[in-house]
Image 1 (spheres, one colour):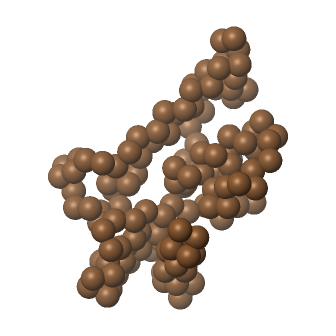
Image 2: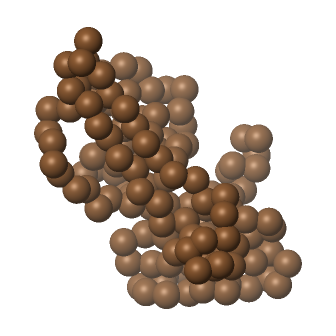
Length: 138
């Protein structure tokens, strides 16, 4: 039983910490995910891949070779063939983070509050497009 156990810990962003940061601050959404247990083939490894909580499903299912069609918004964070990004929302706004870009858009203000890194036209539109797809799906 112990050899097949997998425990996944993932934090939430439901407090004003760290340092009473604003709801739009990307640091607020930088949360750890820890996988523990005898089912792991690789241990004592730190993976710095960007991802979101919804990526847990596809990452886990691909490791155990189970169909993952029911999770269209999930990505395998262990795959090198996936474009890795993190997307977060807050009251009437969103953030979109890649390895090279950090964008935070406020719909009320109608502008980006944060625009860092290698910001291209694609990056400016990707977060908005992703939000629209999520809203259409909902």
